[in-house]
Length: 276
Image 1 (cartoon, rainbow, N blue to C red):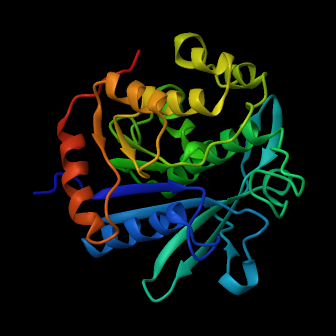
Image 2: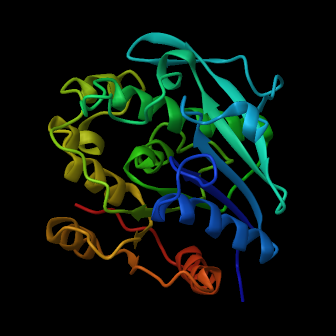
């Protein structure tokens, strides 16, 4: 028997807005099945420049747009757009900003260089989701984050938004995919998080913001982990298992929500554990 009703899904890839791969498939399929299960859902992704606004009929939601978010001591306007996936009538909210998301690529330029501001883009996206949900006045019970770009959702929920009644009791589920980036995020990342008064042990891992450490940060502050693809490095598997948190292995594409419904219910019934 389910002991939850509302699930917030946060993913940086959702089909049909970005080309189909396993993450974009899961980004659409799991929320769709949750909705079919009678759950109330909200679904968010970035409005990357490669998303065709005309084809997918995106339009700005004026009542949700208009605020500024401060990232690295700089104001950035938050624009919210929305579209519906037919025939499911499932709404998707898009976090948009001219500076961060106008470019046509997602995380790499045409020469395969990792964008130097991907850390700030991730902060803006995750904070933008929280602030939009606040404006909606909607209280999620499960927040399911898919992929490294949304790993900061767990950190912010446990720190910056920890006293917000809309989010304080939510359980964070973090799905990890095989989507590694080389090198690291901006070495100043830890300083930028300090602008939101997130410091100390909460962000120790970001002294060296590699892909592995970004995932570990997500694991540390989440309540449960999903190994969404079969290939997950031994380092990350070991860290997740040592955390003592509930873990779900990669699942067949059929009847996803039957498995996730049980997993969400298990997570809702468990006490939170903080990884070392």
